[in-house]
Image (cartoon, rainbow, N blue to C red; front, side, top):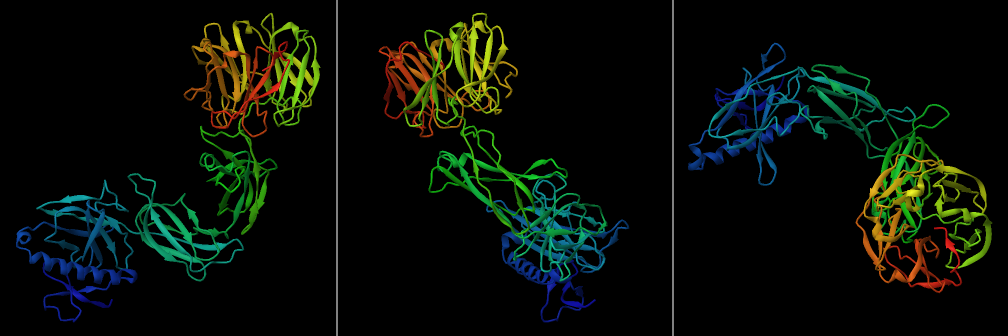
Length: 616
């Protein structure tokens, strides 16, 4: 082996001698391998300069803290040879979080020495630069630097730090593209996880693949590894981080990887306020990939990205990159502030290097009052003779017509709109008779009926029953009911005309003389509830979106002049749910919501409504 210009003195201290004129007693140091040569020379110069600086300071000259020890190799504990192991002492500065490095080498008996060191917090790295392939380790015997394991304090004393380096493990494989062509000049980074815990691996070594795509890491310490593959060309980075747990001296080959060209999936998210900067921070696109091997898809999560605002308040935008070829779909999720209704896009197939577009229209939870099927809310009333009438809304604060949709409803003591309780996509109506039986009347989506049936008994104890929409957050329409003691009960729908487990969700609701569903009043995509008290104050109780409540707030006064108040859905067609009230003279007033728990200017939308009972 060739000699480097330098020597280790009698105290085991490495001295750089660029002129080649070291003292006669000096032992020439062994040349370091490849990538460590330049660093060792520079570090030795820094150490020599630091030693001279310390010698010039009288106050420090009297202090002799030191770190020394012996390095042995393998299970036979053979002492490391002259210059075979480079030892790095790293001094940590708590002031700015930086490190100062000092280096030395082992002598012919495997000994090393750092002397006249500043006091402080240290770590020691032992790097084998010989030909035997022993692993680089951190004292006391750790594959990576770890604050709670490898760091120690040096005061005025002389510390002994011995270590045995295990045989190094090796890791090798080939990098190819999707066409099977080997890729050269791919940067491969091997990082080891701290055995004491921690989710972020520490870089151990980096190299470039050869022209035939092959990479080989030698002298790795035993640890669990991750590999990252990156290139400046058209290929997206790849990461392997499972099944790479290497034992001491293990030889692992065939760790191959396929790199994919950059792919992109992007598109628009469409809904009222989907592009509003006040809304988009609460929305995210969830990517799902078909992991199935049969005819039926098996969807699994494949990534997420936020929805970004655009110039249009009704259009958000998303972009996902770095996708492997396959079949994908997207969903849009929100948090407890904005909660879209359950949704999923169509499926798109992406090939290597493709750029695909995929849009998705979503809806926030709305008060479903569209019985006619034209996407505009309607108002259903019951006449004194028991007839059921539908006043079809025109989606612009007016009416498109009136029709009779039933008779004989006088036998019911309570009739209310139930949204799509049956789960078939059409708005339904529910009614309770004098015996306390609860009936479900399934709408056909065009102002008529499919069928009806009893879905519950014992409902006479309730003095208010209404459907808020999806209160529980499971995607199904629910019922809320208040008993005589003022307790509010949640009857979660099962999406098929039945109920899940009943639970109490409130007390003290008898302070209100009217309680009703108001839909997404406030603009947060949730099924909210309003109550009017005897003083004419109107309070909104926002749903949490998962079967609970957010803090209520006062949203109006002077509502005591109405003998009926109810949620009308988005009667104006502006994307916000509204409220209607009938005064003593039979006029019907529309109070449009502004989307922020407030109101737009009210207007009269009908007269002569005194003899009608609202199905709300």
